[in-house]
Image (tube, rainbow, N blue to C red; front, side, top):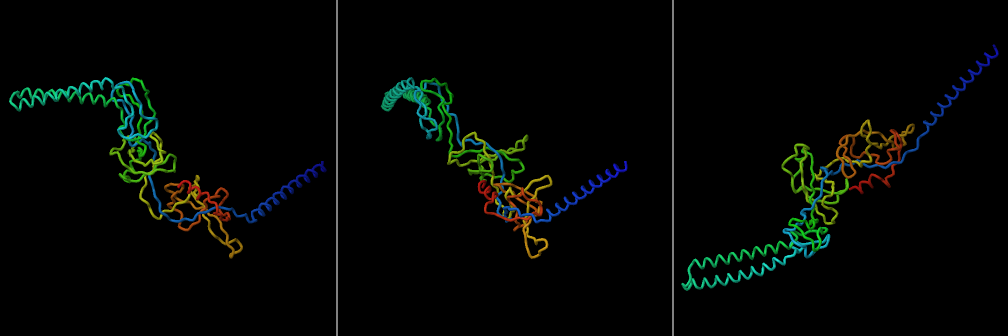
Length: 373
């Protein structure tokens, strides 16, 4: 028994000494690892510079043509001729569709004959009245008969004109909705006509921003968020605010020289506000959002530990207050000063106190700003 007890105590003592030795060794290795200088991390930076900032009010809207209608048939009839092709540029007054007008043309001949007959009768009555061989009543009757004939001629001519469907304004005509030989009732739409050279954009903004808006104010319009490819101006501000949504409706006219905008499209709108000087803005890639707040990594130069004459670049975490965003940039209202060097790429490899080297030959933040701006 005594021998077994001695062996057990020896095993326990050995295990205890081994655990102590392992923990001591591990502690020494960890301390040695952290005592070694960490290699610097390569990052890209931007210098904080106050600059001009053009703020804006952003919204979404719907594009429509400055003028656009579904051209209707003004009267019923059989389609005799279609004088346009799809997507053709037409001018105001151009003949689009001719309806059958044979009956009206026959009535026109009779109406013209009646006018000529009554004109001759009036001339004879007038001559006789001048010579004293005719009464005033006969002259009045001849005048009334001529007026009635002329009225009938105008009515027939109007009926003939209604058989001609013409373009009410210049623009782009769409796909024909009728065929030759088809009977069309009055009011039937033959095609859509849209003036695409200048487009209207309907959009709305919150009532709180009404004081910043005025007629003639410049706007930017695009078909993708942050990319504004067309410019125009505000042409209308609704005098009433929607009591349900608390939004006010606006309308802008935008040049469409490239033909990229079409009626019915969804568009991103930005109302351009007056430029503000001395605003600090950074690429959005330089700003980190976290549960603890918004911060950036600021590069500072400090003396190396143990060698006051040697300098190194390290990063410090600086919490900032941000504001408006536009064109890949974000406004910083508090926390930074002009001349600060801020990390714009490589933050995912950083921790506070890291040493860094700066390489701005390829800066993703600058590339993004060029693309977005």
